[in-house]
Image 1: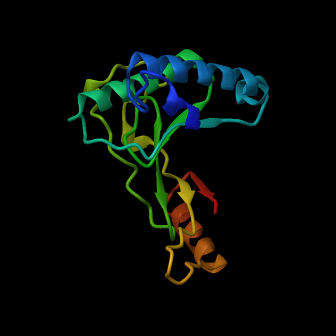
Image 2: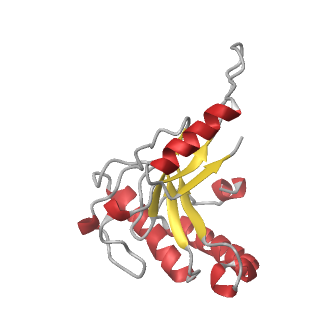
Image 3: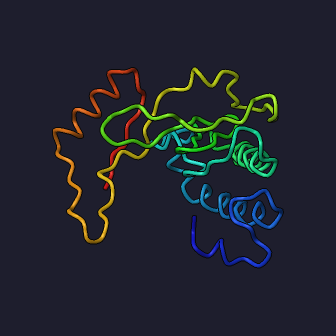
Length: 177
């Protein structure tokens, strides 16, 4: 999230408020207009995008979370990108793939899913979330803590983890850091 989004008067980041939806909607429309030549539907190699990162709420117990997930779905539909959309490690909006974070190749839980009955159905919505492909969008070394030994992850450990994850039927793995 660009830092300036948190400084918009009347804004409440990561919420379904009109100010947030307007500002994020304009930013997303401008962003996708800029990268349009690179989208798969236009012959480019961009096939998927991430709508939210590590945003979690309890299964349908928080009305503002449900409304926020609905607003992400509506934004994705309105942008008409032709892309797959995913939420990384957290609550999954309708029509989006739930991806997880993990270290060491252990297949993570892919997050909380708002019951489909509480969310609107629309273009690109999946009816059965158990059919989503397993994906890890963040497989990292992890972070060092001040005053402690450096955390190191060997290439062998990374390779074993990726092989174990793919061997379990996973569809996508991303490593960074």
